[in-house]
Image (cartoon, rainbow, N blue to C red):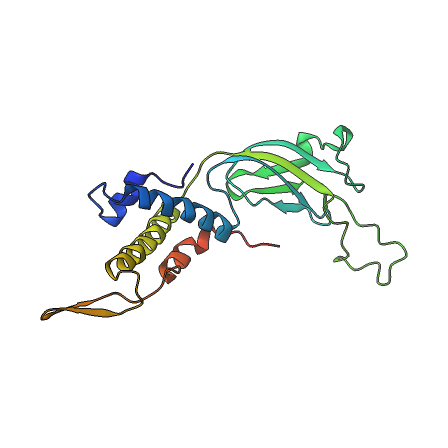
Length: 205
């Protein structure tokens, strides 16, 4: 499934013919992967399982808005059996932000006994001891759809330019008394695409 339809992408790019639909579809496939990897987030919905350290009362999921929480498990041994599932009333789900908040402090309070400066609040409480199993629905913001179309458009224009130049690295050609000047720039990612995606990007921790 793509972030948007071929028809919508062509409308945003003001492409009115079907001559390059195959090329556009291939570029859309590449753009789907690039946007997902850049934003560290899957906008197309699905079933996910993520693990977190236990020293905080918050876990921030990569994908949202949340459709359903299947289970929140806490296990210092990281086996995550059925006996490690928290009761539903042990946490609050902030659906639109993809945040799960414990109602009684850290999901797994740290045992600081024997540690130097044992009273320091920042001591961790074990890596990957909280597992959240959840699902999301498809939810693609309009700004992401616009960035997606503009990315496809940039790659499309570059492909058409390379074709027109005969796949030769030239900036202009003379045909009789006429000059053809080709646009500059490679098949990278335009700055406006990065800017449009910034509010929807999830930082990697």
